[in-house]
Image 1 (cartoon, helix red, strand yellow):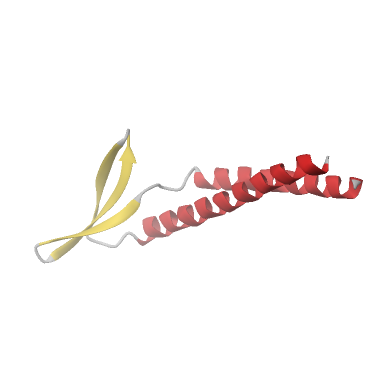
Image 2 (cartoon, helix red, strand yellow; image 1 turned 60 degrees about the horizontal axis):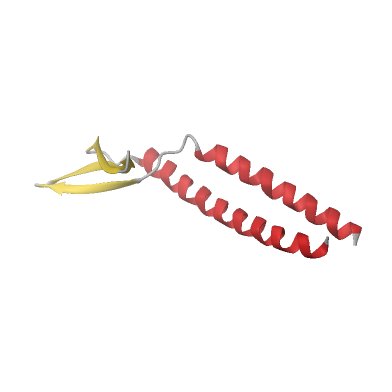
Length: 100
């Protein structure tokens, strides 16, 4: 029984560390999405995000902002991983008291 407790404690610690690492990874990544608008015969790109509770659309230009799109995609993937880690941590917190 002690081995199981030790294993669960280690796993809880590992997932907590992973959660902290993922949250740090999120900090420099931009929030929001890239939107494309057609005005006349031209397409224009905007970075749409909320600031102070209001939706903002910052003009980017006529060129597709591949780097910004890539960073937003990484942010979404990281947020998904955070949700999965939180779900696992919740399960571990539920299981640990029953064993103790």
